[in-house]
Image (cartoon, rainbow, N blue to C red; front, side, top):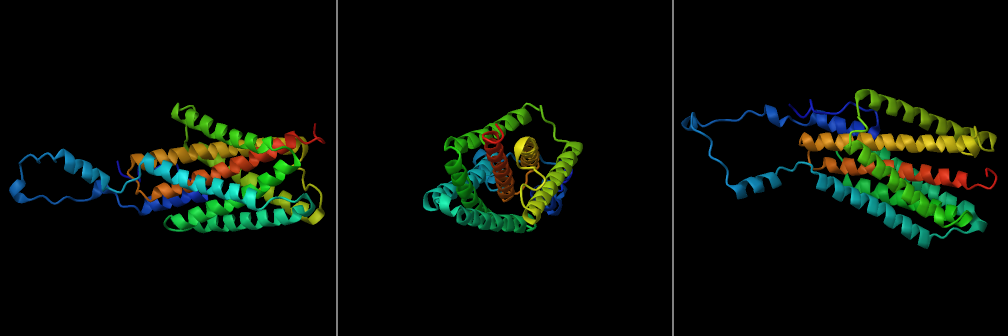
Length: 289
């Protein structure tokens, strides 16, 4: 079975879509003709020396789970490091809270721009992916600091724990095959995420134009429901990423594809953390309780 035939269902998610476009361009190793020496015709092929076989396997340049773990640890480490430094070096002053939110907004928009650039690049660019992670860390650090100072320091720890719990739960459910990623599942998740993003953008625009809370999608009981839906969508995208990683390793994807795996996991985990933090903020709001 060729690399192309082993692919998972096609997705319109930018990160997953880039992975699939790279697979379409990848040559199939199964179809490569092998020249045979006429003098060796009819003779059994000599068994390779064990040391040579190990060296050949190490030089194939295919993606392994260790590559994915290492790249993901690097990108998430950049997020955490930037978040901690921004928390310490850019303390939130309640009297000038708008300045802090301005810094967070600038970092968030810059990270979003880098994410879109990488999503439409032909190949993964490690420097760009790490840069995205660092800018996202600045955004998360300032937002987390502001939330912690206005509510309680424990809310950030709860959000981190919640994000880790979602990741672990989806990983276990996927490994146990309680979640089956099919073409229908992929299409449903993509359509739901698109609708979620459109509603979020419309809510922001309406809030900026008319003032107040927009459509109320981020406040009160409706905001809690909307945040819960966001977390569920993030969990579904984790399952899609796990499927892509599993198929990529089984099909012998190039090692550089592990950067796309790390990029996709980082984007999704950041999404889940933001939705979890917002959900906890609404749940602890005095006006709501």
